[in-house]
Image (tube, rainbow, N blue to C red; front, side):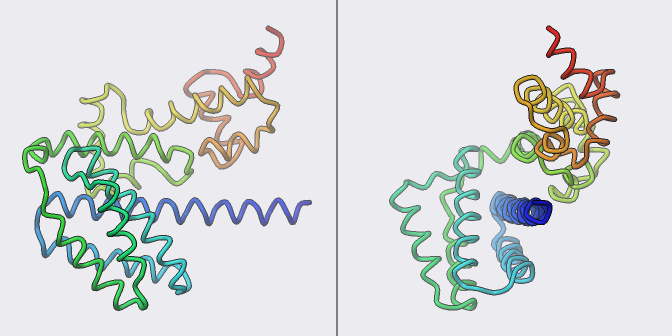
Length: 238
């Protein structure tokens, strides 16, 4: 059972790592497209495909699946911020065209053509540059707070922002620091699981982005002045 649990945990870690990479690639492409600079788009696209190939053993079927994930994520981000809206039929055709590539070289060529065809941009939406970046950061945290490697430093690298400046702007917009926002989401989720399930503390800490029960314990002490175990036992007595 221990071997199975270990294998399952390692598989989960690999999945989380892959998802974070794919989201980072989509975000980098999104940022490049928003600059409306063709050279920048080409450079980011080439670097993105290199990242996919360097991170995983090359199998075209796996690469196609990851490309589909990246393109879906990219188009959702562009549509959500009213920068580019692609109807479902055109979106499906573009994806089919990309993943029908028979080689790495052909995929690069088609991906390059695809990104450079994204001309239906709405420049007005880009005037709120700082706003959409901060909103993007917040949404990224909402989607990824369960990843234990997510912190202010990782976000500043990902969004290519100065960490101190990013934290100041985030606090000014949302009334809370980046780190406190991450912890608030983790704690809220952990409290729900502690009060409503009999899940072991180790499993809760993993699901909520703490990694270990000790890290979760320190966070609870800092923000709630109570341990996870005390919270659960207190809830059980109520």
